Length: 440
Image 1 (spheres, rainbow, N blue to C red):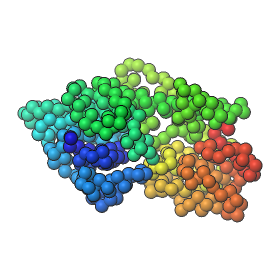
Image 2 (image 1 turned 135 degrees about the vertical axis):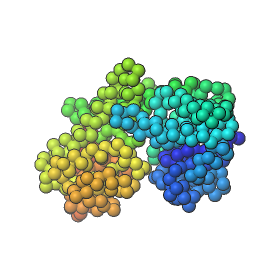
Image 3 (image 1 turned 90 degrees about the vertical axis):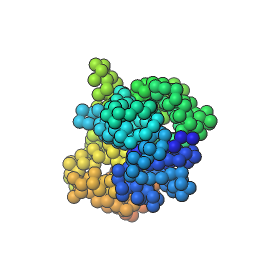
Image 4 (image 1 turned 30 degrees about the vertical axis):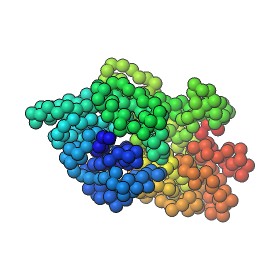
């Protein structure tokens, strides 16, 4: 059974390392952040992800999972080295590979025998070859000739359901240049292989493209239904019924057909822009993805226009904002629609009372520029008290069952902007609300 190291104890690295240890492997997670590593040893999980804490604590207790800042020992004592560090977007939209390549060089500096180096980070097509070249250059400089393989093994984890996604994936992608590397990776994922999870074996470049193509397609699907929703509002159609009927078609499926304020998160915005850059760099146009990026930016501002159009002048208005993370069951605010919508509402004169079950810590610095117009609240009803309107931006489960009888007694206004369509318009109107959804 291969010994595994995962370099980078962020979202992807920690989830991957913890669950691989739960599969029975001995796994060492490596990170340069000493505070994070010490915290993990004490059971402090640095990210919000349902189900992860139990897995980390259990496998650390049984010594299948360990944490360290010592990359040298991690490289030398393990056979398979996962690279799971960030690839933040550069100014031109491309993925920044500096951290990936730095780790590749560290691996090459310390390796003392055959290693399988696995790109788990989302990287552009061609990154695998760059990692291979970086490793070989260091080995040549060291005047050693250790064999190694580079594998592309992209992740498809949804924040909020990453544990389930890793344990029960739709497929496992293995991009490699040798049968030896494929054989080792099948041992890494032996539990999934025995459960007959589909494995796709291909070259490195194809594996890298699969990740970008998959995310870009899903982003396009979200943007498509958002644009259909905008038309539905103008012609009197109901986008929820349109989407439901479309989803009944087996060629389409109902997934990602939920109209809203636009997509966000760490993957879709970054990966769509990166794919556009990849296409441009090789002299090709990928116009559908380019249009998706532009339309998603527009959608966020359309939500502000919807609110302002209904309320009129926002200068003397106080709005309750429920949810600021890009989706429920995560504390992640990267590229969240709220990062555009809230500052724009403040710019137009609104005061905001905000509640999110997990977003306050990150929101404190994300919204530092509008802090004088924003009040954080400890629960939904504190946010709703003495406001002119309610704005639902994230569909946390606790927002699906609001006690509307309380609204009048706490002074909540009757304007209700349900930007995730979690309530029925007819029922809300019957309750006396001026209801505004997306495409309904």
